[in-house]
Image (cartoon, rainbow, N blue to C red):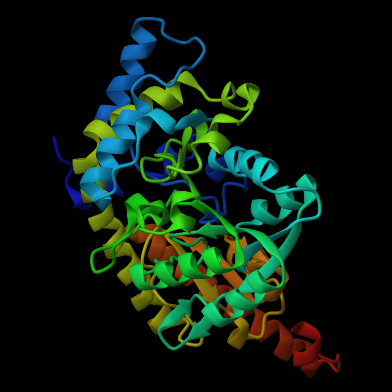
Length: 408
């Protein structure tokens, strides 16, 4: 059964969403519109809901085993990407980050250099530092068409002694989807400089029409054969709290994935495994309708920003449901998310969480109803207006306003 894309993001009222216990709707006071945490305001896909309720009815709430999840993902990958990973080599894990940390512990040593694109997921930096690896920040190149991989800079970072490259593709927070040509060049650089590639591909199922996700491990290169991909149904089907992901090795990395400690995999949840298997096997029609709805929202957001906050630089993402907004022209300082929260009562992710070179940016989650997307931009615009009014009042009363340099 398919879902009407007009309903998938509007089925739940704000009052119903506020009864949820997950972080998104409990992080802020009730007067704040939450558009920060990467959760979606959707009902569960029917196959996922049925898998979970069936498990509850039979009291199936014990420890997790892999079950048919590796085979379910392999079938999805073949259909969606033309990639045919061997399910026999995959390992079930609680989430992508725990798998990334474990595989980097296996393939690198203390003090080794690991390249990460910036802006990047905050947990990449936190966990690599905990692991004792040296983070090499590799900034994406910003251009008139949005962010792109800076391959020249990447080669320099590889040549400087990197041991691994933690590649998030599709990229969080920019929504960039790398082309086959770009990935082929990455593979050639990794081969040349003996760099292991580890990929976070959690946003791949949410790639928009006009773009195509290419799994790095599907390339015909030694670097791809030695790579490890981490995948999950958590973002695309909104089941992150159920705890299940997969480590999928290239053919020459199976021993590395097999070396992941048993106790790491034991953190996976049975509900996560059952829900993910149902999602990859029976949840594709729901996913397709979700992407249509999200596509409408990403264009709606672009239009509302153009109307109400035209100074904000923004490129609609090619995958996912996060918008990376350059608010530096608004002159709100390094952390505009605080201004939007305090003055507009809208909760956004601070750009600085994604790297020290991301001051003045915010990330906005538009996986909610069109009305709430529009309301979010209206609140942001109101916050900017209030800030300007307060500054003008301060100047009029003889108080010196902070300089632009101090706020940058």
